[in-house]
Length: 407
Image (cartoon, rainbow, N blue to C red; front, top):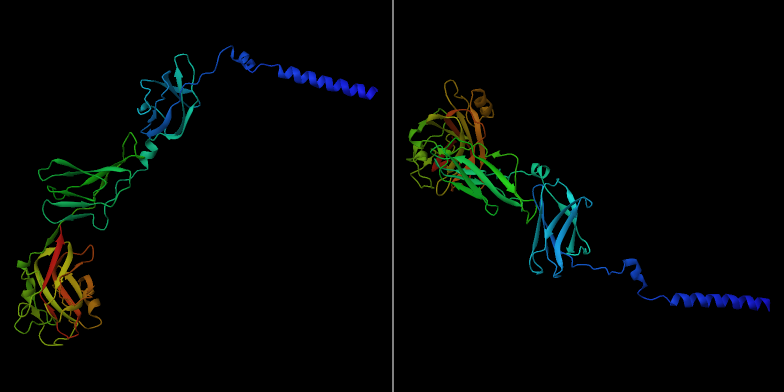
């Protein structure tokens, strides 16, 4: 009986606790709110960050809640803030907040909207908002110029500068130069264009360029590189004056035959010619190939840069040939046949410079242009040594040979 009495007491106590718990009202939580309700004004939405130079701009669409009176932007763990009045409640509009005097750093911002009673919205968080500055600027390089063909310069004033494709965030490249009247001029190259034409360039003056960038699309500031670059030394390529050319008949040179002559190859005709308006060596193997021709250009050129060789319109055209140059032939004539294995060493010992060694892979008819070796010595006299011809005939036929120098 005693045990049964104890169980009854326990059950009775449990029932009392349940009844007491069920007696609380669902509105009793209000005593913790001091008799008032929590009100959350509408929050900012669709935020965006537009970075700049030690500053950035935050944008968002305003809340449609008409009670919103202002927005407050917080950063640096709420140590800094900026208030933006709510002038619109149309979600199609855009609110802009420019924050200046920042460090070059990545920030987190919080935006809260407030009503006139001081009620605050749920926070809108913006992460990875970066402000740029001198560190970013120092990393920028100017848009690269085309190193293979940095420019085309064919006359006294027309200059074309060529650039490679820029980075996608390149805005412009500004080119500064001196015009024919000695005045400073400027051209602006947009990123979608790879070349710029200058029609009044003053020869011999430097051309410099500098590029500008934005860190990301939509940035509010443009950054200019910290330095300027200079276009590599600009020179024009000028044809040597063929009216001064004369034949020099050295003892072992090829001899013109069949009614042709050596001066035909500098008469100025820049297309393949036919017999008899060509140079045709006299007799197969007389002298044998390799064979040479020698010419006096009539003037000394310090910077020979290019040769063009044009064959006959049919046959016997050069395949392998070399160009040699010297300023003065006094004591510099080799006694060896051009086919002698020691000929090249003897030429070098006597002061001749090999300006280029070329091999054609076609039929030898069309104009063949080739650059000579860089940094040549001053040259007035030229020897062209023909090693072989395209059809193994033993003859050499030529329509034209032209040389250019750079200035």
